[in-house]
Length: 134
Picture 1: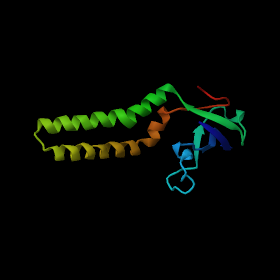
Picture 2: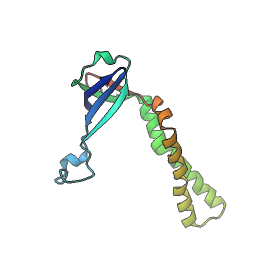
Picture 3: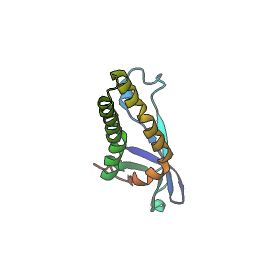
Picture 4: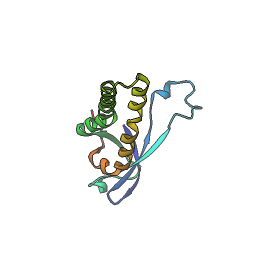
């Protein structure tokens, strides 16, 4: 992903990202309220003095961060829902109740993710480089 440095304050670098999604090819992308054109993110970087405002940089996630994000986004919710489904079958709940409880079981999970958001950010490292990373 490509971005442009818009601000540097100490070790914090703010990068403006031009979002490019599948919407770019849609004929209605200029009028659609869903299409997000631009986003800014702030990243702590030890060698922030090395970069300049207006410089084009490339962002990537480390492999560990990618695996963790997949686990938190898909793995844990899937296991939680399957656990509730199997518990409901064991307790002879109706299919409707099992479905409702499986979905309702995700609510506390996402609330906990929101509460521990600042703590979890430490484990997701966004890497900045001057050249595209494959």
